[in-house]
Image (cartoon, rainbow, N blue to C red; front, side):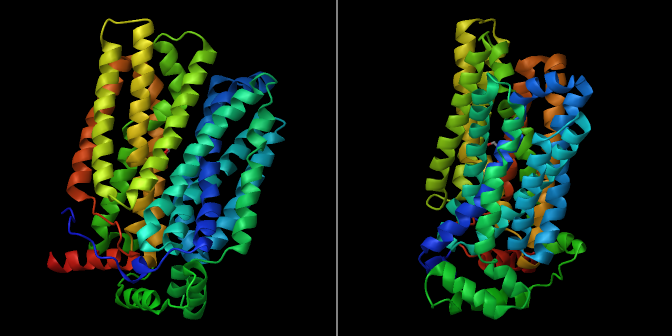
Length: 464
Ligand code: BGC
């Protein structure tokens, strides 16, 4: 069903982007920084936490797992809350949750307190993942929406890199409380920023506050001339059949968009990205770099490639479109995974295996960073009808966290049972499935207003 027609720029697409919208997008994206930091920081902190509290293996697993469970719950509920209470209020609440979670973790006196703190941090990550892309997509003009929403993914990658560096910096002193507590800083910046930033114009319109919607649009577009965009939003709301109930998520005109969102959510994870992000030092060591510091340095290199290639993707995403980037990137992931599997399969060992491993891991992450990384979060903020946008995005984000949980907690066991070569080949096969899925179903949304995208599902349903 791929929609390959040249999209027409709608009313909002022609309006030039104003500086204010950059500020709004940048502050909201801090939610992504916390997402990346809080998921990345634990790998380095755990060794020291274990010493302080004499953690058993089960406790260690809980300290890591509870964040992913909290994020899944937070994503599923956060989207619904964002529909009911507004995107901005939800982001302010998210900041409070992040700050509380970080303080509880840093002040933990025993493992139970630490697990509670990590669960709260997880909730914050889930709230952020269902609300940040939504907020940015609703304030951005159509022609710049791709890169502005991708600021979220950019912030995730910066957060992951910052976590590696902070872990490295505090490793000598073993200061795990600092590692976990430092998240208070971006948390506070997110909260303060959102206090002065406006609510999404589209959410205001959906709640019937047309005057507020108009005044926000004037502010974020930097022009009084916002009537066309406002009319487009009102007309879309008038045509919508959804009433904001959960059962709406399975209406015939929304069903395909749900399948796309949930499908991409699962493929983003089952193609193995977090086995690299969370376990890179282990994989690199098993390929023949014996020193821990060498492995950590190579891991930081991978983190840097992730950041840089996300910037490349942001530069391309509104120019070449979502589909070409997605398809080229996933194809690159398939190739890198196949080579990686072969490197572990072949009898080559020692230095050359280590070099091939590090280079292919970098290629793999680079290909993810231009495709499934940013484009998943972007599409799930673009393709759903306004009345159920939060709830629908929350379901897709929740599916992403659930899939993340499953992959993260089966990877080491899978390595033991089938070995590294077959594990990477399995990811390669799943990436082939992701490519076919994307080729067949993912629409091009470049340059179209959210309202045009929403209308296109209704047209398709009518045609069917
Ligand atoms: C994914 C995360 C992943 C990160 C890596 C995000 O898009 O959702 O699970 O850790 O990218 O950059």
